[in-house]
Length: 171
Image (spheres, rainbow, N blue to C red):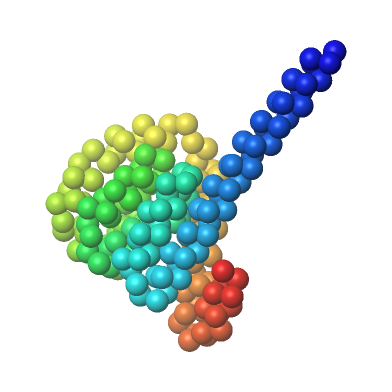
């Protein structure tokens, strides 16, 4: 009975240590993402990319963050980086061709050899990675993200700088 109690306590302690470590990874990830976004607002695209790359090492990145990193890389014409970010998305089953076609910064990337390398087996890779996904959830999430970005764009177009100041104060 005493041995069972000790095993139970040790198991609980190990579980607590694992959860603490996992939470720290997420905390670090989001801190680095926040800094990357701030650097993007400052038009410091190379630093922004460094912070995104650092964050992506901690946990599997959210597609929105990978798209933001892609945009940053396209602004400085680092097309190999663009391709690597798109590969992350495709490996997660995210269909990115429509997104690329709608991005104003992607025109030069689409003319590059990196894009040709990326697109040559795109359909087969995407189909393979999407086979296990619930597409209804993906569609709802994409709609949510589009709405979120439209709100940010509207704030930017109206010249409301208090929005960005508020965003920085939250960070």
